[in-house]
Length: 87
Image 1 (cartoon, helix red, strand yellow):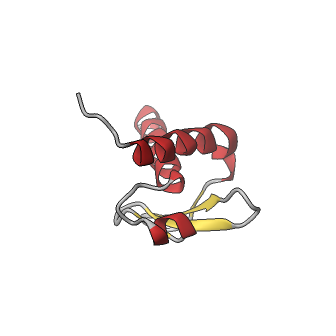
Image 2 (tube, rainbow, N blue to C red; image 1 turned 90 degrees about the vertical axis):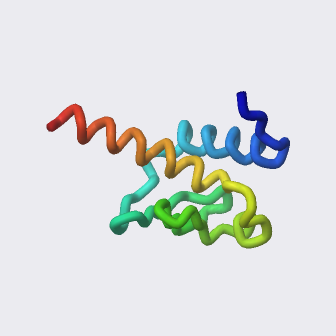
């Protein structure tokens, strides 16, 4: 079993909460690009393929997955599941 660092665990939990609370506001805007709501009214662009986000947390700590990337990971998985069900 893999153990997450406290820094990563905190970000993942916040990403799950973000997805649960605001998944309807996440927008798929390009092949691997998403706009994700931030906590202060702004939104951030996430490049899912490259694992990058425009938020200040990711700029300061690129070694960690920010909450926006976690939310997009969940959103993309749900999109993929829906597409498979339709096909």
